[in-house]
Amino acid sequence: MEGRLDEGRLGCAGCGADWPVVEGLPRLFEEGEVRGTDRLLRILYDGLPALHDPLVTLLMPLLLGDTEARLRGHYLRRLELGALTPRPRGPPLRVLEVGIGAGANLPLLKQALPPGLDVEVWGLDLSAGMLGRCRRRVEREGRKGVRLLMADAHALPFPDHSFDRVFEIGGINGYRDPERALAEMARVARPGTPVVVVDEQLDARERALRHRLAFRLLTFYTTDAHCPRELLPATAVDVLAEQFCRYYFCLTFRMPEARPARSARGRAGAASFHR
Image (tube, rainbow, N blue to C red; front, top):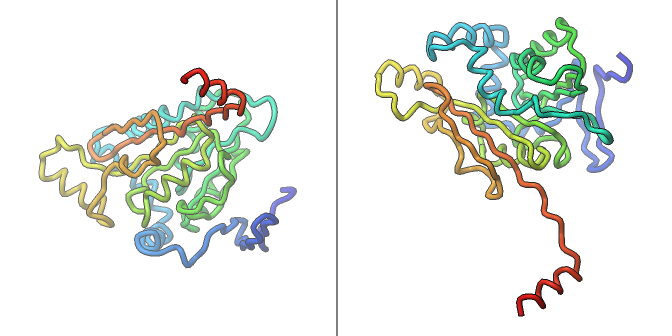
């Protein structure tokens, strides 16, 4: 493919950073910053990349009493992909999945996007094993416009307001600093666009011991798996926190549109009006 770099280095003219490209995947993160639960979970995902998605498909109906497609469909509806319209000028429409894993959401994204709409899907993850599976899936299914890279959710390598939709599934509770990761997702999302985050939270109405034990196994990496609504940026609007099934929450929010600054003349006029 023209313009593809399989091995080498990428340099940033703006900040001077220099990043390796290994087997076609840019590695846009600082290895020293990957620590704690981030490092633990990366080891697990790198060790079992081929088993992750089949286990999810098998266990979701058993644990949650519903199909994987219907459960994924709930949070994809919150992304409001059908409301995307072509941009007459400027960069193409872009959707970002933080923690894309092996790409299980890619087919559902394609179904939910308006037919014929030109959209780039960007996916990042810290697990080379999972991204390798995702890249093979993209190549096997002949998907166009999918960009994959290794990056840290705590330091997203994108300018402000780069994406028309941003979402993250099944990772926020395991991040070493979920508040920082939420702030990064808010930063790279265009103002007004929905940002959707999903992860484990036990339904407060659940009393059955077997479900509590199953939830503890799912969340072995933390004792505080919950919807981090309290960690959202203070300026977030349209916040919606849902317990959409027994073990999972769906958190949706937006960052407000910037208010146009009033001219000095307008401010003076307002001041004189209130005298």
